[in-house]
Image (tube, rainbow, N blue to C red):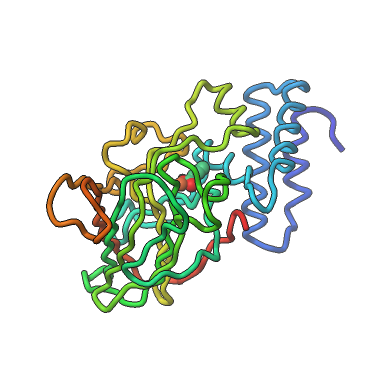
Length: 296
Ligand code: BEZ
Ligand code: FE
């Protein structure tokens, strides 16, 4: 029986104490302890509690097969980056630093040949040629790594947000060759605002935060017996590197996107200027697994 405010937390913890799954027991015990402590610390009013419940319900309502507001909220409060860095690579010591998956990964991007293009519909913007090298922790190349790439357009929109882009534009899967190299052609990504038409946007506005992410390309590297690597490589001169709305930038992930004003163009249809990015990825031995796709 509850006789006063001091009894509530111990009663709830006691009621959950026989949860057979040890990990679930540990997580729920910690979660309830913290969320009760939070309510006590801020002396949460009933009106504020209603706002909070309504906020959670709105996150659910805003989520569909094509939009994941839950992931977006976790991203803008830094929880995705925290969990990502807690679980991946001791600050880049062995494997390439990971970065959050984000809400826009789609699992069935079409395959392209090594050296092919991920531009599937007319996408005005500066041409970009990307070359990645995938190595193990001893510096040896890893062949046959599945490399899934996705990026926003030069207008700062993913294809699923933009009627003007073909399905799966600027997305593709390719495979590393015997030297661990993968190459593809694209266009320079631009920075973009995260979607602000739902609860995540309300939160950002209430906190007087801008919604922008610095321009980047996403990479998901998968090969059995290696720990799957999910990361992003950022454009080095982007104005939002220091203030990414979702806290995804670490120094090691700032790539050198080089602008070429002269010289031999990398393809017959290219005239200067064009851009190149070269980046080395290191995968460590481990378990290969794919995340749950946030959208279809
Ligand atoms: C992204 O990088 O695609 C992303 C990450 C977090 C929120 C929105 C977009
Ligand atoms: Fe992105």
